[in-house]
Amino acid sequence: MDNLSVIIPVKSQDHCWEDLVNKLLSFEGKFEIILVGPDFKNMKSKTTRVRFEFCEQGRARQLNYGAQLATRKFLWFLHADSQLTNNSLQKIEEKILENNEAIYYFDLKFLQDGPSYMNLNNLGTYLRSHLLKMPFGDQGFFMAKSTFFSLGQFNQNAPYGEDHLLIWKAHQRQVEVLPAETTLYTSARKYQKNGWFKTTTRHLFLTYKQAAPEWLKCFTQKNKKRPTTAVAIFVKTPGVSTVKSRLAAHIGKDKAEEFFKLSLKATETVVMEAISKSEGSIEAYWAVAEPEQLSHPLWDSFKTVSQGTGDLGQRLDTVYAELQKKHDSVFLIGADLPHLNYELILNAQKLINSASPYVLGKTEDGGFYLFGGKNEISSSTWNSVAYSTEHTSADLIKSLGNSNFSFLDENFDIDNFQDLKNLSSYTKENLLSDQRIIINWAKTQLS
View 1 (tube, rainbow, N blue to C red):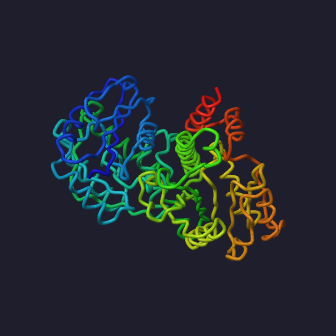
View 2 (view 1 turned 60 degrees about the vertical axis):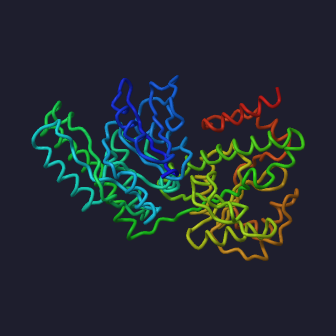
């Protein structure tokens, strides 16, 4: 399993992860191991297979951060005190080959370091996960990175049960939750320390309290379809195609490519935040220019769709028509607006669900940074627009009818050196970390 990132959140002053890492390193393969915790600010690894990443404590926060740093296509979330069997990786590989869009979990058994009643907990865990389809995070979830991000990641605001809530998101989105058909072991010390009856009944109560409203969502969604929005990000693969050629004329090809990669990351983060806040009603896609690059590692975080061939109008038509088959509305954006506010995407979704059949965000140079629609659009309409001109957005509005549009705030995308200057002085509030990184990068290019 070379294409696997193992993510392990670690509490402060906790060292039980050492045994788990040693076990993982005994397996063959070039998978990466990412340990995330508050004690790893200056931690150095003795092997390239293990990475230590600093993150403030909070399991959902640590898990999400590890996933965002992961460089492989599949994610395996493990608790630091997990104990594996010799066939753990083999089972992961088998199951991913069977269905690479599902969430898988291990059967859980408690070690003999707790009360004698723990066999009842073993049985209860089996029934809960196999019959009720409610596995918990200590059962070692693994899934494709695109599946994880499509579900909006772990809920960092949940007071408990972020793993439980992720599984309910999967049920609500009709993502399969399946057993890995092998066992993972964990400690039962907390049951010994806090009392078996007290700990077990508390877990049962909290599970019921969290599961009841989530089950109700599943039930109501079966009877009332919730609108879904596809967000397609139009991209080229750096190193394969030329990117940001007008910007490269001022800062050089290498710097332009560096900017593009940072802009990709910022755009990815913005869309992830929108997905998280949308409660599962947004699905993201990379719309990739080169058909042979759909499986490139850069595009692992979301599903992919090919732009097809032809000029920009034909490619917009191809992507819009393909995604409209699967979703109620489709948004088309680029990856050259790294300062885009995720709330704008959510606002655009509200507008298209309740007001107009189309939504448009214009750029200062006459183009558009976001187009959204829920109606079919003919190929002739897409191809009637002159793109990359000062009249592009006006032509599109004229073709589809001004009265059919809702409009977002005007913004600027990054095409040339002046746009980079504008980005360097961008000071809006609520910027995400990757947005701040690229703005600071832009400042260094001008200093």
